Amino acid sequence: MRYVKEWFLVLFLMMISFSTKAQLFKSSDTLIRTRVAAITATGLTGYGIGMVLLSKAWYKNSLTSDFHFFNDNGEWLQIDKVGHVYSAYTDSRIVYNMYKWAGVRESKAVWLGIAGGTLAQVSLEVFDGFSDRWGFSWGDMTANLAGLALFGAQQHIWRDQKITLKVSSDFRAYSHIPITGSQSSVDYLDRRASDLYGDAIFARLLKDYNAQTNWLSVNPAAFIKSKPAWFPAFVNVAVGYSAENLYGGFGNAWEFGSNSYFLNEEEYPRYRQYLLSLDVDFTKIPTRSPFLKTVFQVLNIFKVPAPALEYNGHNGLQWHWLFF
Image (tube, rainbow, N blue to C red; front, top):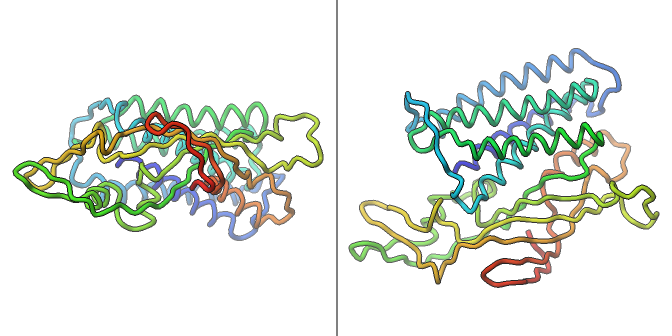
């Protein structure tokens, strides 16, 4: 489950964001060199520590001496690729906001944000390149560049993020359904899900491809020159992408112990889900509180639960009164 590494970087940058803003919260209109130094030192130190911890926790049993490439474009119905777009976008936005807090001028803060997102994502790909389980993926890098470009282009053209990327999860529980494998052996669906996605709620938020939905959230008011007074500036329209019945990268087959297992495609069809829903752009909620503005920036990486219209190739159109 490679997507957890992107989430690791996103959450780490969120913690840095809170720690650097914890003293005053309020962004500066003039350059404050001590803040710049503190952000840079904290970021680079934390980055180094994070890479060491990640190498020990994630790659310790898989690192090799040979750098190689790996084509994983067909895995997970591209949910992981969408995750890369989201992670690169969010990394860049967080780093940008930190440097704006320090009073760095707009254009320089944008490039620092892009540089921070690039450093984080390329580092992960280099690790993958030395892993015997994966390899350097050009598909991942293309997705990373798309996320960086979405952030940078909007900030350069509009000095605003009128289109944001968000994520949500339904934190589902898997059933204890027996799966018959080779030599009449038995495995269980919840055990397989636990092996892939973990057991704790936090782990499921990070890893569970079946439960996660990635969203492109658009703020209509930001595109309307003469917005009606009654139309809320913080209401967004969101388009989501998710998938169901993912119990393996390329297919629902796996090894456990000395036995092989697979899920019947008719019972567990792997399919994509496309969703349309409403959302909230927390950064557009009027407030004079620097603290709330900081909190809203962090909350804005998540899609709020709301009614949603879904289309998928398996069940057709479906309505959800509340979709997470």
